[in-house]
Image (cartoon, rainbow, N blue to C red; front, side, top):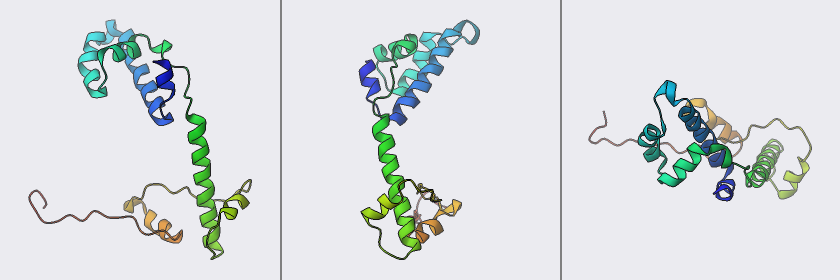
Length: 150
């Protein structure tokens, strides 16, 4: 089980790590908070969609489940490559030329102030940022007239 947990993507690994740590602490202080293992099973096991054996192992034997995230290095490398591509796109936009793979390598080691592209939220004003990078504006949901729409 430890090996399977270590193969999870980093976001899932650390979220499950923190959640089960919290449940373990609740279980340890069950004399104060009345959340013994049976109550934790009733409330949390269905939410996590986990079978009884896995839930028991993660909550009661929490310290023996975690050995580190093996996929973290791979995800950090992907994030670094993505950040380089965004910097190359910004550099190409400022010099009005098309981005090339060489442009991404040119930014290596330079301090370039460019925000990494995040999911667009129009209320945060990121559409103007997308347009300045030469990207199309974020799609908007169009609500049609119908039941339940005021």
